[in-house]
Image (cartoon, rainbow, N blue to C red; front, side):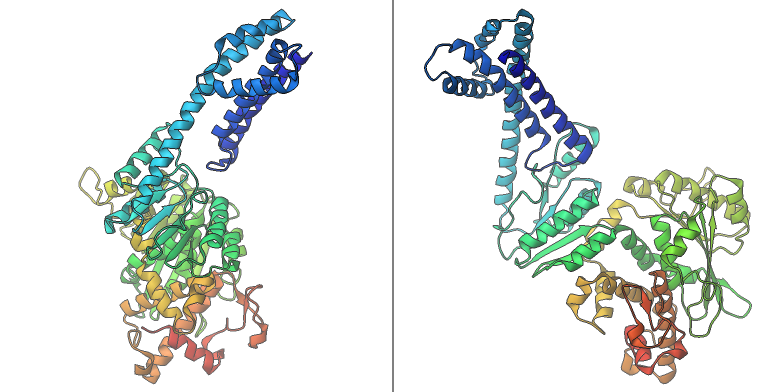
Length: 597
């Protein structure tokens, strides 16, 4: 009976180890934890060999004093020998002691397989051990250098690490949770990391102690994995562990609301923490670098004003952020803006109305009110770019000055941008067309592309990884520095980093200031004390128009009363969402203070 039981337990142990490893690796992606898939397989094989040995040594030691204790000890000893290529292979012959012939055959076969697998696992462990020892040695030899630690090795972290290394030759780049999966992508990433002389740890970012690093050297952490939940969890633990260390920064790549709330609540101590909302940062950067072209390319109206006519194709994450941004960015004296959005989703407009109800309200959308934000937004739901209906819709947009394409894949974005250029050429207009292309090599190859007749398509491909994940964008952003200067006109620096409301609001103010200076708004490039009365009024009215549109794009609505006590940020209700004339003099002064150089 004992032979049956032990054989069944051994088979189940090995199967359980393999199954648990497969579930963890393919299902939960919990790499780099205390028990990795490799460890689970080792445990399964160890238990199965040990259990198999028990009835064999039990039969060999029959009649011996202290039989049970000796059986356990010899079984354990032989199991350990199995993993060190020192096992006695003749023990397999003792499977013949089993009273059932067919079971002894299976028993010996199972042990033979285990005796082959166990040393292979040992060899794998040794390779892993020496690889980690090598990584630690390389890290310790650069003890005094600034270190940039990435939670994962992927295309984004490689692009950012490569740019940091170009700008800082002595910087130490560290990638954690690095596993060679023997696939082409993984091998290519590892080779590219080695070109950077980066340190590669198999352990995850939380399993490595960076506290011992030289105190005056900077440590910058990036939780930049594909799993946002893991990014947030790792970030909270990094904050807890390193918050008292000087010269320490953390960049958390997450666009989720729970990430914002958890990071806002965390006690960051001396640590500087910033959450990177990759989509929002991309749209902000596009406006910072090329937003002024929206005004330069605007159409002249009979009354001398100018018309910005924008088309957005795709109301996914990028398209939504661009729509929200254009609603406030295009608020400018002498300019009018209309935005047409196309999306295949039948509920696209309904979904956007839920995000920004008052922005789309009939009381404001398409209505000109003195001292209020002025814009016209039309969302065309259920229009597929691959249909004649889409071509017909674009044919009605004869005054288009700007088009933005974001449909979820580089291939679709490029195809649609080319089709838009064709449709606009038939209309004899040439608006600016921007299309999202994430692959850097493809974006470079497509720059200045022409057709077979040598005619340039004139499409701007934006958002590639190499540009988006660079030191100038993530770590040392000019826009971020300008936003901090906006914030410091009314608040404290720590509040800029602590609360994303402050951060995002100041970024928007900085973007619009850059645009109004470029558009020549009187007084925009002056200090507050240098303004004439007329210039002050112009700046205040314009800044309030922008602020109203911005707040509505963020989902805020009017609180129903000018009383400050009616303001409720949890409900996204604000008492100042009114026209300029309805503001108090105190609130008007705030607009002029923030809206200047």
